[in-house]
Image (cartoon, rainbow, N blue to C red; front, top):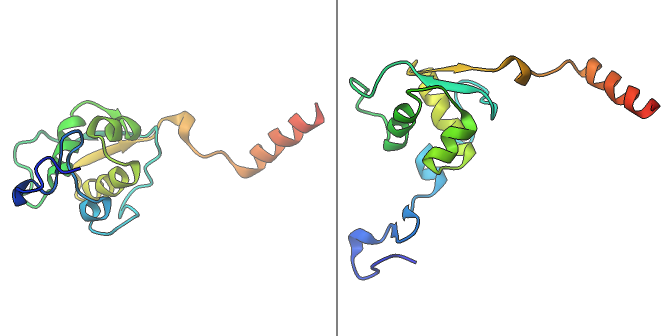
Length: 127
């Protein structure tokens, strides 16, 4: 429920959640990132500090850059900013395309060859 329905400026505020904005409004209606395939365990780190950022960045993108001054996983960024994972992936894609962040995928997170996975399944079935 809005905190003060009689106040038009507070229409988008919730006492517990803060500003209420639909996910599609934050991402501009996009559901896929323009760059990168952000796995949950991939690390993101800002290339520079908050000074000198482009003026067109959204408050959420600025918060991502501030949060990722130290390497954080995609899941940690989503949790820290309290945003849906899909929204974070789209915003990270924009930041990666603008060369404002770097992405590092841990070696264990890399996709395995399908033949290896089939061999493992077949081996488990044979037990």
